[in-house]
Length: 78
Image (tube, rainbow, N blue to C red; front, side):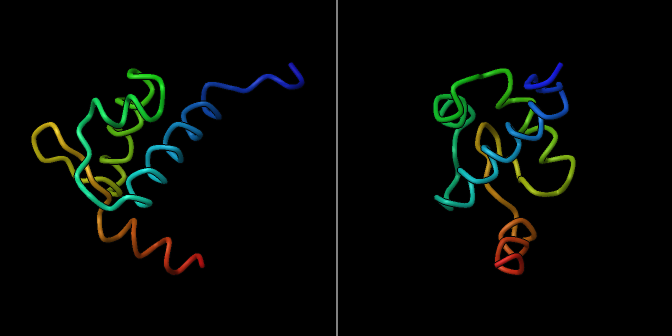
């Protein structure tokens, strides 16, 4: 098992990648744009859903963007 990642690790990596993308370029992203950038439509869709449930991503129709809380958390961490 050494060297293998768990499903939870994979989910956390996908969420981090999606959130980093949305924070780096602060604009509405379509679901398909996020999927293209992440490279996995299913992982990106699931990550967006989890981030939305956590209050870190807003969804408006077929677009997503980082919430003010997500942006502020990055400012505080720096």
